[in-house]
Length: 225
Image 1 (cartoon, helix red, strand yellow):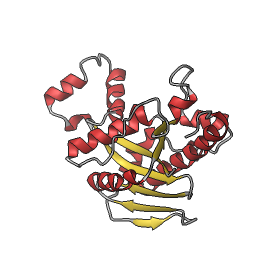
Image 2 (cartoon, helix red, strand yellow):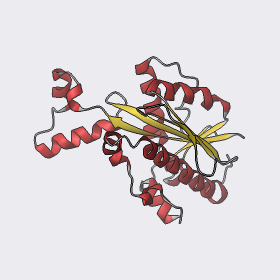
Image 3 (cartoon, helix red, strand yellow):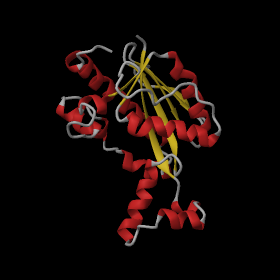
Image 4 (tube, one colour):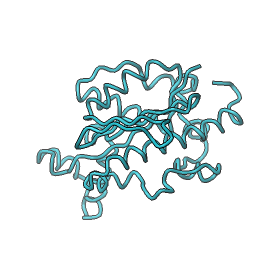
């Protein structure tokens, strides 16, 4: 079975970029300055108020990857170990490249992909008029097609949910957060034009997810994948 792991990084559009009616709608329950700031922060989480900065893909069998990321200039480079190919482009180009790759694999693996990455990719594609090539939201209880590790590690929300960083630490896996970057840093990184740092951080997430998948697949998956 061919397998691919993917992850995205997103960034909300400035609240001021929306028309007055939309701003009023988004802020309808924000009665304090703190709640207004929370609304602004949460714009990152929704595909109609945010954009995709980066999509990282990693093949756990070949241990090779690709990262498509936004940048102010055209960039294309290899990782130091030559295992990962980085290519910059617009959000539209990032999505088109993703949809070219994803049908080639029998199984795709994510961490919270069902709750975030998959609907985000599909809705951003629809918003930008980009044809999709695969259903990223198949039957939830068949990990043979989409293995969402957050579903698997919580036994489909029976036990408590934790972050990828928490699971990595619990299983003794190097966390990409150990390098001092989190998803909350995307705005400042974009403002500083640190596009490569975003791409490399996103790639760190899929590498960590690959090791978490290996642990699940070898020790916890009783039905095979």
